Image (cartoon, rainbow, N blue to C red):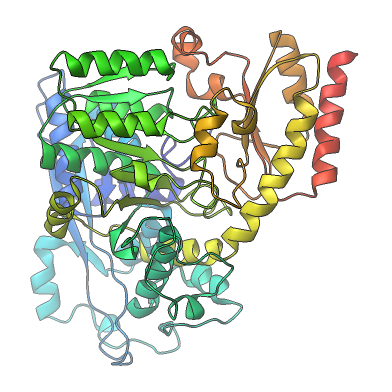
Length: 541
């Protein structure tokens, strides 16, 4: 494979920029990973050094690169976007360690940022930080001392022209107005806060109230923090909680998305993993706590991926109150238009890459803090100095644009998913359908379901034989791939893709090898039902 999901396969644009920097600034035998801030680069460096099993002859080091100013002759009413980046350079033998950090943390630069920086590097506008002072004093090469207004034109705040996305794509953000970008990020935060509950354009979004709509009094967009990916929001939540509450083991409750567990296992003192996620597992957690064990936090998904189980948040919240630990809930699959989980959590995280965006052309993540949580003030105080907005400007613009019709998309997908489930669950060759509406944990889901909320667009199924699973999947006429929450229906042999090297372990947690996961899209419901009927019909042949 040449490319794939961005955290598992490094995007070709990022590879190109990393190779260019390593070639120009690296030593013999060095490679590098690229990050948006010095803090993130140091975290990668520390991780690699702490886990390296060999005595490297070349030290792991960090080089910073900064953008030279080229906006002197632009309108004084606009400030243009620039990008500093940081390269962690290391011996090529340590590449796999760097890749671990890149994948698990989700804090690497995006492909759009890489393209922007590649352009600047090629044009002499991105220089090593140590060379910046002399370059600025000399005003740089002559061709950059005077900037053509034809070549560089800032985008004005609240521009709503129909070709905005084309403009951004073609010029890949070289001179975006910071005011426009900040407004896009604010609109995204307001949507996440639940303020925007209808399809609203950017300009209108700026006029609405700040008060959130998640059923928690006093909650606003000021409690919403954006991150460059969903995993970044989880990684940084765990990191922040360790800094605020102390470095203790956490509980991973229920079978989670693969990298969530890896974060809890590899960063900090480790975790207790309860892969089944049933009441007996909570009994064991409670037994540990009664015996004097102290934990940092309980991490869970609502509902879980790929088994669509919903944890008993009422009981978990009671345990957290009694034994002083934080509750972190990943609402990516459920999403806040279907379920409200904030009142049970200290922190709610989500991948905005999925259904919030829908167009599968941008990554993002969010962390929101419950203003009534026990640790709210301590977390907010820590964030006041620690938080970095590392969401690249163009990515924020695409995320805002994509999410304008979030509400209507969710409503349609909810209905279509139920229609597809009705076909699957009655088929005699399907062993098990996994969907919140038909789960044994439905009562826990319904306890958090919004008055007009549905059961989401993600479902999984297993079969009585691997032959049937393969026959169904191969003949299911949908897009095939590893993500979810796309505007088009996407299916995958989830266990084989995510847990190929640990199939027996996954099976012990109830995740069978022949499981097929489906993320429902915006296709015509009747046509999509017909597609599933055709694929299922072949199993009876």
